[in-house]
Length: 226
Image 1 (cartoon, rainbow, N blue to C red):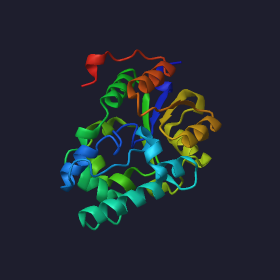
Image 2 (image 1 turned 180 degrees about the vertical axis):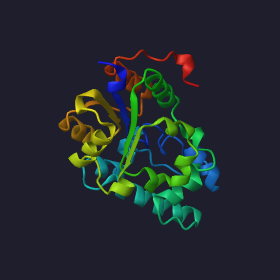
Image 3 (image 1 turned 60 degrees about the vertical axis):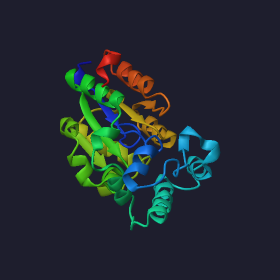
Image 4 (image 1 turned 30 degrees about the horizontal axis):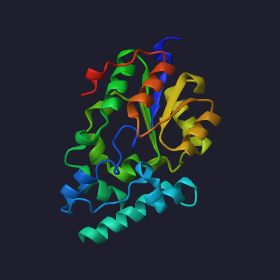
């Protein structure tokens, strides 16, 4: 199959960007908090993050998790963070490129250079990050499709979310490789007939290598991920 009849479909937060769990030091510096103030570690230390465990058990949504963390940071800083986007913009909005995963950028360039189509399928791209954040990321201009539930109001793993992305790409599900860090969303994509990679935030390189292999593409050399 020609590469232009294939697509790499990515979740955004955690897959394209480093998670907020990984950038506590940057957040603390940006918000004037003492080092070590932010102790919640999500997938990096689930045993010490009961709220994360509740989300993984589907007792609360991902949005519920981050609403709670946003309120906590607002209380710590005395800032009026009423929305996740307010928190994220304050924490990392000045230099979005600093929190991009180099593995993501390398894989995106590999897929783009081979002629594959590119898509973002996110539940909360602008809700969490704000449109100004996205406008600062030049590489997103190479994406053919961005489906953001901030506007569609259809959240993964609702089948309609995947179908919307496929319709806009104009490709069959089996020609698309979907990458997401939430298992519920991966299961939704599998039900839609897409090839999938359950992204491992503990090993981003391996996850992107798996996605490129499914697309039949060569793997970037390690030195390209800078």
